[in-house]
Amino acid sequence: MSDSILEYDSLPSTSLKAKELIMEKCDSWTVVFSLEQTQGHGKSGVGWFSPQGGLYFSIILPQANIKDLQIITVLAAFVVAKIVKENFDLEPMIKLPNDVLINNKKFCGILTENIISGDAIYSIIGIGIDTNITDFPEDINSIATSILLETGKKVDNKNILEKIVQELKLYFEEINN
Amino acid sequence: MVVNNMDFNIKIKEKIYNIKILEKGSSGISIRVGGRSFDFDSVKCSDDKCESISDFGQDQKILLQKELKATIAGVVSEIFVKEGDSIKQGQKILTLLAMKMENEIIAEGDGKIKKILISPNQTVREGEILIIFV
Image (cartoon, rainbow over all chains, first blue to last red; front, side):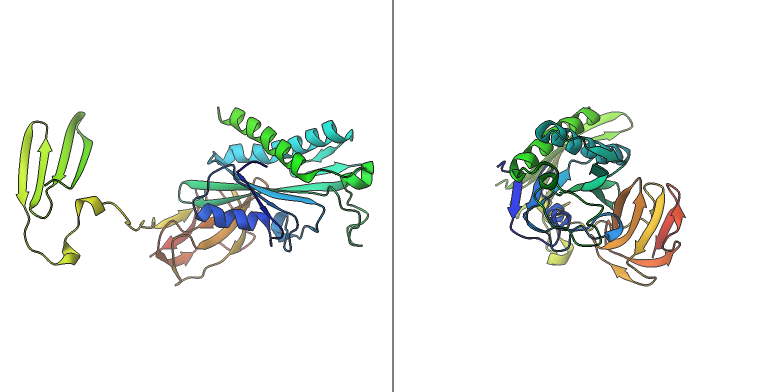
């Protein structure tokens, strides 16, 4: 794996860890990746089911204009959909701005969080993908799915992670140039 | 013996001046502007009033602006401080939901909250004053 991907067995939340790293002046494009999250969350603190098997990571973005960051959230959804389509022969659908669905069931959530201090904006994009999850809690069972459930094939999480980061980097550079 | 020096340019009324400050150990400093040199011998003073040139500019505390303004339009989600609170640099002040992103506003420097002009769930415009500091 790339040097800039920090791997953890378990974290409360990859975005929370990324925020700590930002305070320690960590480099942009550092990726925090965890095999599970104990307090994974989406928008407005709503929980994100994050047991082992899923792919959970947060990317520390370079400083950018706040209006460009909104585009990045949408682009991240597009990148996830593109990688999943190319690698698993599925037809993902983007529910703007931050969810990706397969067969009308959610399998990916994206949340961009900014830390604003005066004129400085530090940004983290957190992505959770249900890759190898086979059992969901009752309250989300009818609205959630995973790539494994849809294809019957196990996903190499690290491989998909690297592909997503690489692609997102290209789009980000394009926006900022 | 010269132990530290600084070399910089300053611009005054469209004219640029090159300035070199040379610290000569404990004996004093020499300031060179263009071809002219100004020597200053050291005088005795208590440590808290003296500052080494090499330390100058380091570890300065950032002073808070008098007001915290909304960087973008959005909805105030949570406020983590109250009026009268002393706050430290990096402390979380509030979160603002904007453009489908969560924006955590943290203190740029140390200070004290004088007045909070917003409340949770309130919509704010870009540039609107949210909090006034003492």
